[in-house]
Length: 205
Picture (cartoon, rainbow, N blue to C red):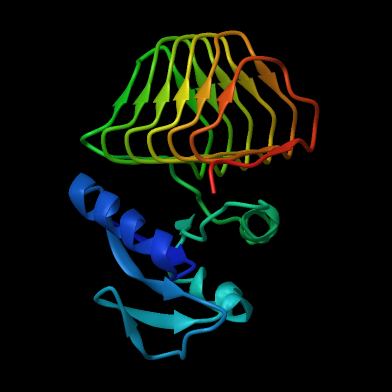
């Protein structure tokens, strides 16, 4: 079984661990974190080092997944992604055995599709993105790289989501809507019209 490093040991990491353990495709070598003490344990795995230790760590473990969460900005995930590419690390696609990804859909490297999510026919999701639990990406959607489609979000047919965007829990995007890059759609928001780049729509308080 191939081993994989998990970069980032916050709350999102625990969900990633659950998906990886459920799939049985990778053995988790350990965690990398910029805050936690090297040698400590988190979620049952050892913290092997910090971001600065990545060159040494990836010389032994050639695969990694970014497990840093994303809400307001994709900056940390994007930076780590670029660093791992520089180090020639393999960034596999991780799909929960409880998710459904249509055979005609495409996923970019480093993307994770979590429990009970659905990526439907002829849709695509870019690199280093999160399709979180119970999210629905309907037919012919395009989701860019470095996006987070949060828990229970609904993207109806033909939605286009620009890179670096966050779509909050339970939001609903009407069919055919285009959301510009680096936008934030809050929890529970219903989007009926196109949004320009950098839009921030707050959810319910």
